Image (cartoon, rainbow, N blue to C red):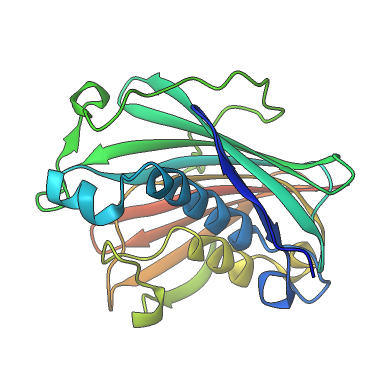
Length: 251
């Protein structure tokens, strides 16, 4: 049996990942939540490999929280696919620190590309810090042209929204930062999508993480169709909007 590979360069981190049953939906396609979780995990693997663990950054008063993600799914990964996943930092833009990803199969074909924006936060006060205050390492820039649209601000219209239901935040949703894990939002979105759209293959997904959702809070889900191949959704917590997302599907 071959061992999965990983490697670290000056400005990239590479790791092989398998899409097993737990990471896929009833049609054996990789769930959007799996791709979101992989993006979050790869950022952690990269920094861990450089000696910048979550505990070390916490002690320094500097942790990263996801702000926005854009996924472009060229060919949705499926059960048993082994993917070569590479991530790079990609500079800064305003208050955001950017990171990009490619997921390729064993034939070298691009299956998915990802762009992400992160904010630097003091973990104790939750105060947002400017990127230039991060001194643990220099932020590098990706040398590869990533085939994924930029992250975007997802806004829902003021009228015509469907009431989709409510979703409590459970203990099992929480991550090490004490809030609803970023990847779980993908499963929440799919659980509340109209039934016909859940069956279709996603081609793109955009999400904004606006406000932390914590234990026992309840999210009120609202949504609206945008044509035949897209759906917008918003999750509202006690303090306001926690997330907005845009789901796009192959026609």
